Length: 181
Image 1: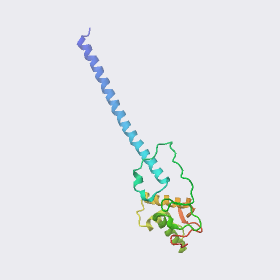
Image 2: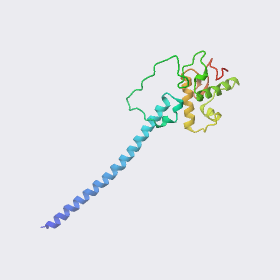
Image 3: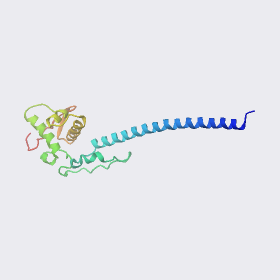
Image 4: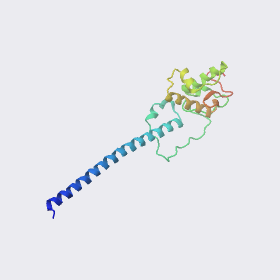
């Protein structure tokens, strides 16, 4: 017959093994939780960046926009009412006859000027990477994609044409800054 002390030692040993197993499992769960949290943060950042690229651009806040947190999923942004009069330099208005490029911010005017010069010299369209080189920017993805976003916005508003994917030129009847076409 086993002694009482022997039985207590057996139970203590069993409890100690169970504690060790649970600690190992807790460590594994903690590591899995940390990995899941990192992945979740990366997706939040990705959603925020996509929102920045697709959202309206206010050139005076470009660098401050990277700090902004996107609204929770499911919250729709209110659409701005369509207006024929654009606030100067704060947005890209839809091109119409007689609208001067001076209503655009300097970044957009610079793109239009480069493409107007190419048009005047009877040269072909430009890619965003070529524009980055022309403007003296590093040809890193962030700079090229920022130019692409602006060029696509100009295409959507009728200032530029994109007859071939990724190759931009002035839209018909659009003149560059200063009225040259």
